Length: 452
Image (tube, rainbow, N blue to C red; front, side):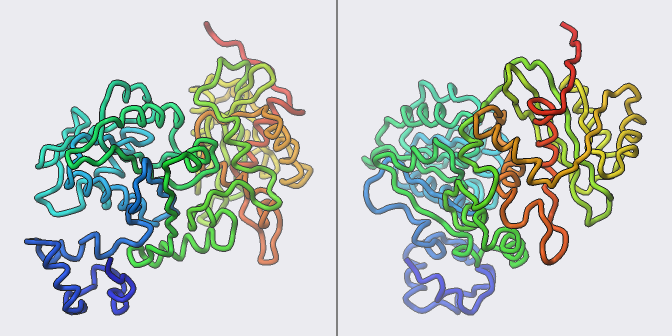
């Protein structure tokens, strides 16, 4: 492997690297390995840029698990591994993502996707109607969604790539079906293998996978891929996550389940997660409107939740950023109607009469319950966090932005005043707290009569 730091010491990004910067030894290496590639393609040559942790394990493995932070290069590593397996003899490839849309956007069409890496003469073509990739050498790739685990049944593959495993709604079933489908040796005699690329989350499925025999884990840090990232991106994520437990997950690629002092942790949330909700007895739409609608205003927290037999189900986080009153009011009314909700719970501390007035302009008969906060945000959130700990609240699907905010609530100044001024408001959590309190706590909401 070439010395990446040495090659880039005179360049801001790989695009600025000139062949004149390379030593005779490095030029000989490129000439030997790249055959008739043109200069732009030479500068995209993967062996020139990959890091040690983006390199497939030398030892035999069943699964190569790549945990990476934001922009750490895990997608490119997965795509390049598939490209290399196809060149060396794999002919039946499975590509699995959380949804078909994400598979197309990231695994295929993205800058690091299979349709955009390697020499153009070796790239596959995509047949959208069949969700199928076809390489010039005869290899075939099939696209699958974790939303339909049974789609993998009966298939046979000699290599597979599973992307963003922690975002899959049916992770255990999909992974099980995928592994059972890996039962063909490639033409080069290589046993079937799987690469899994994901931003880590403290899910039971990920922890179990990491501890499985035959799994080799590599961790990619965002900083290790800095030469391929814009300075503005690096500055933004470092400012948002640097020096925090969440930064260990989002930048360092580590599995983090506890934030010191926080009211929630991701392990507790994940333990009670559901893919679907039962028929619910009551449904509410809770909103935490901002005081202003300017460019520096807080978001308008909007959460939909329901209850059945003493158990609450969070159905949607529809929070809007930089929304005008008419925007968040329209969104609230639309959610109320689409979910056939029983009531809108509106925090009234920030102009309660105005909030109700804006909503009633759109829906005069909208049932609205105004609530007023008399205690601190953390104090109001604590009873709801205890309900989660008792397993009485389930998230139906994933709500990454909401869950990240929940797991910082009570830690690092979230929901409190800081020495530098007002801390960022936990708007999503505020709406969540009002919704769960309305369903399981003190604010009682009568059930709406629904048409059968």
